[in-house]
Amino acid sequence: MSRTFYVNGDFVPEADAKISVLDRGFLFADAVYEVSTVLDGKLIDNKAHLARLARSLGELKMAPPATDDAIVEAQHKLVELNGVDQGLLYLQVSRGEADRDFAFPSKPVSSLVMFTQTRKLTDSPAAERGIRIVSMPDQRWGRRDIKTVQLLAPSLAKQAAMEAGVDDAWMVEEGKVTEGTSNNAYIVTSDRTIQTRHLGNEILAGITRAAVLKFARESGFTIVEQAFTIEQAQAASEAFVTSASSFVMPVVEVDGIKIGDGVPGPVTQELRRIYIETARERQDL
Image (cartoon, rainbow, N blue to C red; front, side, top):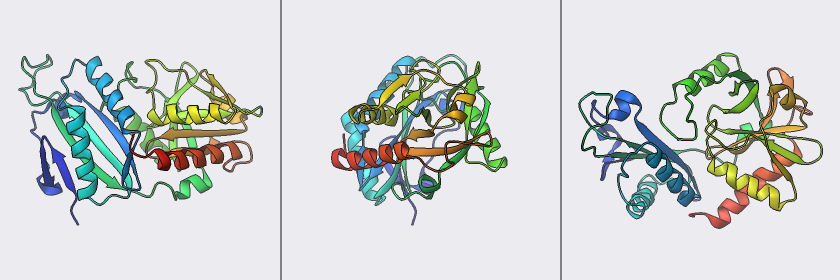
Protein backbone atom coordinates (compact mmCIF):
# COMPACT_ATOMS: atom_id res chain seq x y z
CA MET A 1 0.00 0.00 0.00
CA SER A 2 1.42 3.38 -1.03
CA ARG A 3 1.98 5.98 1.66
CA THR A 4 0.38 9.39 1.60
CA PHE A 5 2.77 12.35 1.62
CA TYR A 6 2.12 15.99 2.45
CA VAL A 7 3.55 18.48 -0.06
CA ASN A 8 2.86 22.19 0.32
CA GLY A 9 -0.72 21.91 1.48
CA ASP A 10 -1.73 18.78 -0.43
CA PHE A 11 -1.98 15.15 0.66
CA VAL A 12 -0.78 13.09 -2.28
CA PRO A 13 0.20 9.47 -3.06
CA GLU A 14 3.92 8.76 -2.70
CA ALA A 15 4.35 8.51 -6.49
CA ASP A 16 3.00 12.04 -6.87
CA ALA A 17 5.05 13.62 -4.08
CA LYS A 18 7.36 15.93 -6.01
CA ILE A 19 9.18 19.22 -5.61
CA SER A 20 10.94 21.40 -8.18
CA VAL A 21 14.53 20.69 -9.21
CA LEU A 22 15.08 24.38 -8.44
CA ASP A 23 14.08 23.94 -4.80
CA ARG A 24 16.92 25.33 -2.69
CA GLY A 25 16.78 22.32 -0.40
CA PHE A 26 17.82 20.22 -3.40
CA LEU A 27 20.36 22.69 -4.78
CA PHE A 28 22.03 23.99 -1.62
CA ALA A 29 20.75 21.89 1.30
CA ASP A 30 19.08 25.17 2.23
CA ALA A 31 16.52 23.41 4.39
CA VAL A 32 15.83 22.24 7.93
CA TYR A 33 13.92 19.26 9.28
CA GLU A 34 12.42 17.62 12.34
CA VAL A 35 11.57 14.02 13.23
CA SER A 36 8.72 13.35 15.64
CA THR A 37 8.11 9.95 17.18
CA VAL A 38 4.73 8.29 16.71
CA LEU A 39 3.82 5.99 19.59
CA ASP A 40 0.39 4.37 19.88
CA GLY A 41 -0.69 6.57 16.98
CA LYS A 42 0.19 9.77 18.86
CA LEU A 43 2.99 12.27 18.36
CA ILE A 44 5.55 12.45 21.18
CA ASP A 45 7.06 15.77 22.35
CA ASN A 46 5.79 17.38 19.17
CA LYS A 47 5.57 20.88 20.69
CA ALA A 48 9.27 20.73 21.51
CA HIS A 49 10.08 19.62 17.98
CA LEU A 50 8.10 22.52 16.53
CA ALA A 51 9.83 24.93 18.89
CA ARG A 52 13.22 23.68 17.71
CA LEU A 53 12.03 23.96 14.11
CA ALA A 54 11.14 27.60 14.72
CA ARG A 55 14.61 28.20 16.15
CA SER A 56 16.29 26.57 13.15
CA LEU A 57 14.21 28.68 10.76
CA GLY A 58 15.07 31.83 12.68
CA GLU A 59 18.80 31.07 12.66
CA LEU A 60 18.69 30.72 8.87
CA LYS A 61 16.33 33.70 8.33
CA MET A 62 13.84 31.34 6.69
CA ALA A 63 10.12 32.11 6.76
CA PRO A 64 7.82 29.58 8.46
CA PRO A 65 5.84 27.62 5.84
CA ALA A 66 2.66 27.63 7.94
CA THR A 67 1.41 28.25 11.46
CA ASP A 68 2.12 25.64 14.12
CA ASP A 69 -1.60 24.88 14.35
CA ALA A 70 -1.78 24.19 10.61
CA ILE A 71 1.31 22.00 10.74
CA VAL A 72 -0.02 19.99 13.69
CA GLU A 73 -3.37 19.48 11.98
CA ALA A 74 -1.59 18.19 8.88
CA GLN A 75 0.66 15.94 10.98
CA HIS A 76 -2.30 14.32 12.72
CA LYS A 77 -4.07 13.74 9.43
CA LEU A 78 -0.94 12.24 7.86
CA VAL A 79 -0.51 9.80 10.76
CA GLU A 80 -4.16 8.82 10.43
CA LEU A 81 -4.08 8.44 6.64
CA ASN A 82 -1.01 6.19 6.84
CA GLY A 83 -2.30 4.19 9.80
CA VAL A 84 0.90 4.62 11.81
CA ASP A 85 0.85 3.04 15.26
CA GLN A 86 4.60 3.20 15.87
CA GLY A 87 7.07 5.03 13.70
CA LEU A 88 8.36 8.44 12.68
CA LEU A 89 7.03 11.57 11.06
CA TYR A 90 9.57 13.59 9.06
CA LEU A 91 8.98 17.27 8.39
CA GLN A 92 11.23 19.26 6.07
CA VAL A 93 11.16 22.98 5.29
CA SER A 94 13.24 24.53 2.51
CA ARG A 95 13.61 28.15 1.42
CA GLY A 96 11.60 27.13 -1.63
CA GLU A 97 11.96 27.35 -5.38
CA ALA A 98 14.15 29.96 -7.08
CA ASP A 99 16.56 30.14 -9.99
CA ARG A 100 20.01 28.92 -8.93
CA ASP A 101 21.89 31.65 -7.08
CA PHE A 102 23.86 31.48 -3.85
CA ALA A 103 22.14 34.61 -2.53
CA PHE A 104 18.64 34.21 -1.10
CA PRO A 105 15.75 34.95 -3.47
CA SER A 106 14.15 38.36 -2.92
CA LYS A 107 10.68 36.96 -2.23
CA PRO A 108 11.12 33.35 -1.05
CA VAL A 109 8.15 31.08 -0.39
CA SER A 110 9.11 28.30 1.99
CA SER A 111 8.26 24.71 1.03
CA LEU A 112 6.89 22.14 3.49
CA VAL A 113 7.08 18.38 2.95
CA MET A 114 6.07 15.68 5.44
CA PHE A 115 5.99 11.89 5.37
CA THR A 116 5.79 8.97 7.79
CA GLN A 117 7.72 5.75 8.31
CA THR A 118 6.20 2.80 10.14
CA ARG A 119 8.78 1.23 12.41
CA LYS A 120 8.84 -0.92 15.55
CA LEU A 121 10.33 1.31 18.23
CA THR A 122 9.49 -0.18 21.62
CA ASP A 123 10.38 -3.81 20.78
CA SER A 124 13.87 -3.29 19.41
CA PRO A 125 16.38 -6.14 18.94
CA ALA A 126 19.15 -3.53 18.95
CA ALA A 127 18.05 -2.31 22.37
CA GLU A 128 18.16 -5.91 23.64
CA ARG A 129 21.69 -6.58 22.45
CA GLY A 130 23.18 -3.08 22.37
CA ILE A 131 25.01 -1.42 19.49
CA ARG A 132 28.68 -1.26 18.56
CA ILE A 133 30.36 2.04 17.73
CA VAL A 134 33.48 3.22 15.91
CA SER A 135 34.96 6.69 16.26
CA MET A 136 35.57 8.99 13.30
CA PRO A 137 36.68 12.60 12.80
CA ASP A 138 33.81 15.09 12.87
CA GLN A 139 33.81 16.76 9.46
CA ARG A 140 30.53 18.68 9.75
CA TRP A 141 30.03 22.43 9.55
CA GLY A 142 30.23 24.61 12.63
CA ARG A 143 26.49 25.13 13.28
CA ARG A 144 25.35 21.66 14.26
CA ASP A 145 22.85 23.22 16.65
CA ILE A 146 20.70 24.01 13.59
CA LYS A 147 18.91 20.88 12.36
CA THR A 148 19.66 21.25 8.66
CA VAL A 149 19.46 18.64 5.92
CA GLN A 150 23.23 18.92 5.39
CA LEU A 151 23.72 15.29 6.36
CA LEU A 152 26.43 14.10 3.97
CA ALA A 153 29.18 13.95 6.61
CA PRO A 154 27.15 11.86 9.10
CA SER A 155 25.89 9.76 6.20
CA LEU A 156 29.48 8.98 5.19
CA ALA A 157 30.32 8.18 8.81
CA LYS A 158 27.32 5.87 9.13
CA GLN A 159 28.25 4.10 5.88
CA ALA A 160 31.84 3.66 7.05
CA ALA A 161 30.53 2.13 10.28
CA MET A 162 28.36 -0.29 8.33
CA GLU A 163 31.32 -1.27 6.15
CA ALA A 164 33.36 -1.87 9.32
CA GLY A 165 30.70 -4.30 10.50
CA VAL A 166 29.39 -2.19 13.39
CA ASP A 167 26.20 -0.22 13.98
CA ASP A 168 27.09 3.44 14.14
CA ALA A 169 29.82 6.04 14.59
CA TRP A 170 30.66 8.62 17.22
CA MET A 171 32.23 11.74 15.77
CA VAL A 172 35.28 13.20 17.46
CA GLU A 173 36.59 16.76 17.38
CA GLU A 174 39.73 17.97 19.18
CA GLY A 175 39.92 14.65 21.00
CA LYS A 176 36.37 14.78 22.41
CA VAL A 177 33.16 13.05 21.30
CA THR A 178 30.63 15.46 19.83
CA GLU A 179 27.71 13.12 19.05
CA GLY A 180 26.64 10.14 16.97
CA THR A 181 25.63 10.28 13.33
CA SER A 182 22.01 10.95 14.31
CA ASN A 183 21.96 10.88 18.11
CA ASN A 184 23.42 12.34 21.30
CA ALA A 185 26.09 10.35 23.14
CA TYR A 186 26.47 9.53 26.87
CA ILE A 187 28.58 7.56 29.30
CA VAL A 188 27.72 6.29 32.78
CA THR A 189 30.35 6.15 35.52
CA SER A 190 30.32 3.77 38.46
CA ASP A 191 28.95 6.41 40.86
CA ARG A 192 25.62 6.73 39.00
CA THR A 193 26.78 9.80 37.14
CA ILE A 194 25.69 10.35 33.55
CA GLN A 195 28.00 12.44 31.41
CA THR A 196 27.15 14.02 28.06
CA ARG A 197 28.53 16.89 26.05
CA HIS A 198 27.30 20.36 26.97
CA LEU A 199 25.03 22.21 24.57
CA GLY A 200 26.54 24.60 22.07
CA ASN A 201 27.07 25.02 18.36
CA GLU A 202 28.95 21.71 18.29
CA ILE A 203 25.92 19.47 18.81
CA LEU A 204 22.18 19.37 18.31
CA ALA A 205 20.02 20.05 21.35
CA GLY A 206 18.15 16.76 21.18
CA ILE A 207 14.52 16.73 22.22
CA THR A 208 14.91 13.18 23.52
CA ARG A 209 18.15 14.28 25.20
CA ALA A 210 16.28 16.92 27.21
CA ALA A 211 13.56 14.47 28.24
CA VAL A 212 15.97 11.71 29.26
CA LEU A 213 18.17 14.05 31.30
CA LYS A 214 15.07 15.35 33.09
CA PHE A 215 13.96 11.80 33.94
CA ALA A 216 17.49 10.89 35.04
CA ARG A 217 17.68 13.84 37.44
CA GLU A 218 14.27 12.93 38.86
CA SER A 219 15.54 9.38 39.39
CA GLY A 220 18.50 10.57 41.45
CA PHE A 221 21.28 10.51 38.88
CA THR A 222 23.96 13.18 38.78
CA ILE A 223 24.26 14.81 35.35
CA VAL A 224 27.59 16.17 34.14
CA GLU A 225 27.36 18.16 30.91
CA GLN A 226 30.96 17.94 29.80
CA ALA A 227 32.64 16.47 26.73
CA PHE A 228 34.36 13.10 27.11
CA THR A 229 37.01 11.20 25.18
CA ILE A 230 36.79 7.82 23.48
CA GLU A 231 39.11 6.47 26.20
CA GLN A 232 36.73 7.68 28.90
CA ALA A 233 33.87 5.98 27.10
CA GLN A 234 35.78 2.72 26.91
CA ALA A 235 36.46 2.89 30.66
CA ALA A 236 32.86 3.73 31.57
CA SER A 237 30.48 1.28 33.20
CA GLU A 238 27.85 1.96 30.52
CA ALA A 239 27.28 4.06 27.44
CA PHE A 240 24.21 4.92 25.40
CA VAL A 241 22.73 7.23 22.79
CA THR A 242 19.37 8.97 22.54
CA SER A 243 17.24 10.07 19.61
CA ALA A 244 13.61 10.29 18.54
CA SER A 245 14.03 7.13 16.48
CA SER A 246 15.80 4.98 19.09
CA PHE A 247 14.74 6.48 22.46
CA VAL A 248 17.54 5.27 24.77
CA MET A 249 19.87 2.84 22.98
CA PRO A 250 22.67 0.99 24.82
CA VAL A 251 26.21 1.11 23.43
CA VAL A 252 28.18 -2.03 24.30
CA GLU A 253 31.40 -1.52 22.32
CA VAL A 254 33.49 1.44 21.18
CA ASP A 255 36.39 0.96 18.77
CA GLY A 256 36.53 -2.76 19.53
CA ILE A 257 36.61 -2.32 23.34
CA LYS A 258 33.66 -3.65 25.35
CA ILE A 259 31.87 -1.20 27.60
CA GLY A 260 31.42 -2.69 31.06
CA ASP A 261 30.32 -6.31 30.65
CA GLY A 262 29.62 -5.84 26.95
CA VAL A 263 25.85 -6.03 27.42
CA PRO A 264 23.17 -3.37 28.02
CA GLY A 265 23.56 -2.10 31.57
CA PRO A 266 20.94 -1.45 34.26
CA VAL A 267 21.08 2.34 34.06
CA THR A 268 20.46 2.38 30.32
CA GLN A 269 17.68 -0.17 30.63
CA GLU A 270 16.05 1.84 33.44
CA LEU A 271 16.18 5.08 31.46
CA ARG A 272 14.76 3.41 28.36
CA ARG A 273 11.89 1.95 30.37
CA ILE A 274 11.13 5.27 32.07
CA TYR A 275 11.25 7.16 28.78
CA ILE A 276 8.83 4.80 27.00
CA GLU A 277 6.41 4.62 29.93
CA THR A 278 6.38 8.39 30.39
CA ALA A 279 6.07 9.06 26.67
CA ARG A 280 3.02 6.80 26.49
CA GLU A 281 1.46 8.61 29.43
CA ARG A 282 2.10 12.11 28.05
CA GLN A 283 1.79 11.25 24.36
CA ASP A 284 0.95 14.23 22.13
CA LEU A 285 2.70 17.17 23.78
